[in-house]
Image 1: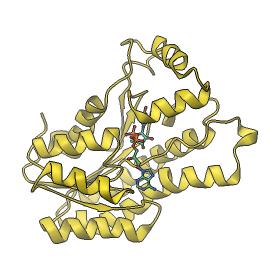
Image 2: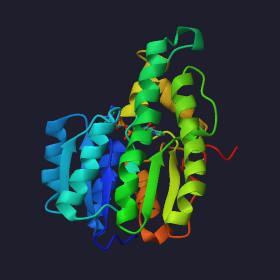
Image 3: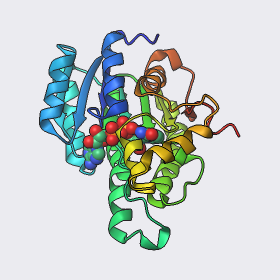
Image 4: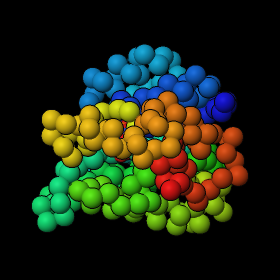
Length: 254
Ligand SMILES: NC(=O)c1ccc[n+]([C@@H]2O[C@H](COP(=O)([O-])OP(=O)(O)OC[C@H]3O[C@@H](n4cnc5c(N)ncnc54)[C@H](O)[C@@H]3O)[C@@H](O)[C@H]2O)c1
């Protein structure tokens, strides 16, 4: 298991499935975390549960100032920031391309792409001050392949991979590693929403169809994603930069 040696990681989307599991794991592994998400009461409940090695604040990632406040809180509370897990994301509307409005596109890109970009912009000076570190963005298998009905989501997750690869080249000489976590279908809220939107009232049938295409025969779990995120955020992956890390039960192997 990854060892964090008191390192400080800021996490967005931290009260969701993957974010919460990752925050819990990092604290268990000797790290300290700044947990952030949109709902202040959920964030403070999570920070309280995690204990003295956690602090939380409400952050809307679409806003640079909120991302900056998260970074400032890390330095004010713990004196350093070693990494960021830019994980907040939304699935958006499931609809054919022609029915995806400008508003749908803008909302998905504001959170999934620009939210990550703002997080990096805010965190970069602090990570440099701490002597280098790790940036992990949550992309998806939808960053590597298409999915009908999910054009904005898929395009935003592909865009993150281009950003990650370019930043790995730019930031490498400064000791900052950049990678993406690419989950396949995860057994959590977001997949329940996508399943239900794809076939209202029959989400369980969509789940069965997805599952049949996964070699392990099941969705992955939040905790399985968290273990790979923690690996990428910790020094256990000190030689790894510029890569996509799939946690997909073999979904993309075919
Ligand atoms: N669930 C899956 O099957 C799956 C698969 C591949 C990738 N992902 C990605 O994993 C990441 C985490 O999602 P999850 O599966 O834990 O789902 P989730 O919905 O439980 O978590 C997403 C979190 O992001 C937060 N969020 C949304 N908009 C925000 C904003 N403007 N500012 C700050 N936070 C915001 C939500 O409040 C939520 O807590 C997302 O980027 C998602 O796209 C999920």
